[in-house]
Length: 447
Image 1 (cartoon, rainbow, N blue to C red):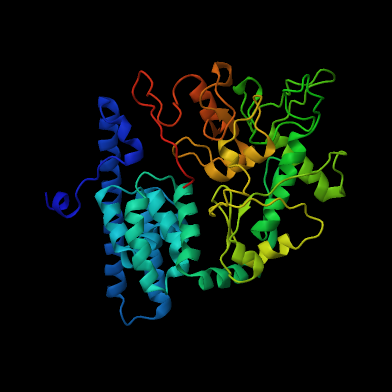
Image 2 (image 1 turned 30 degrees about the vertical axis):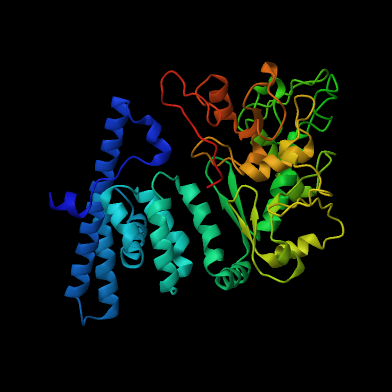
């Protein structure tokens, strides 16, 4: 009873409120809350145990105290079914949140926050540890933001919020991080290895987009008619053939437009790995033309040097220092294409709003594709973080049913959620829910 008063049970997150009314799902939510609360209570006990042992060794040799602390972490690991290192990471994250993010900690104790999100918040807000005033702000905001969010969504929100709170801190951290750039090779027993490259995001984005564009452009034939995408293949966010063939990066590759030759049975991810390996090994690129687009949003003042406000990737998952963006913008070999957003239009001289124009044909022209990518950021299914650049542009009202090719009728959907929508389980924004009454979604911004 005391816990119920001190830590009241949370309501179901707003994004899942349409599930209320389904008896089994409501029971599942109550079980989730119970599990979260029990986990939080157990973590509290482990922290108390560790603190008690620490106090008991007050005045002892520092090495003895450290060993005693490690033993307390080991005890927690044995009960949690974790390694010593994992248990230490969990307890350290919990201790940090309890001390520096008290309101978020209370939400955790109430059962509104899962342990995975607690750890994610601890890791991502750590740069603010010496900024008590900023921690208070983000603590207040996390209580409203975090419930119902996936760890990836929560991370994206925090890494964007930190530069807004302290731009100088972000830029200092970015410069320090560049000093840690490195490459790591890890070899496994099954004849495979992992190559990890820690480099500036702007460099990684360039590599990522070029590899993906090259992998998707392999073995493509001339389309059969002019209402199909150009010979280079549809844009990664283009509408699929028949509006029901979204991009699947893990499925065998089959191009429905190929009229001659064989089928490449590698998945897109396998082809990306093979291409990158060949480029690194011997510079070989299979004669594939490499052309890729990096979509970022940057304040005009950052481009001119009047501000150090960073740029944000179209999927809102990456923050890029202003200095890196200026360097890219000044590259004479780069083919830049600029879009102005959030400005007051000159109605006499301004171009038409890209998102309101109705275009002929099924497939969105490049400028409209870009506009939707910037607007949506990610797949529009709630909780999904697949970038819009790697998703389809789906007609909310199908093209075959006179659905117009316009910004208001197009939204980004990844393969999985495009299929759900095609089968009637993912209504478009403001659409009628399916018969099960458990699939209603709303149009959303990237997390």
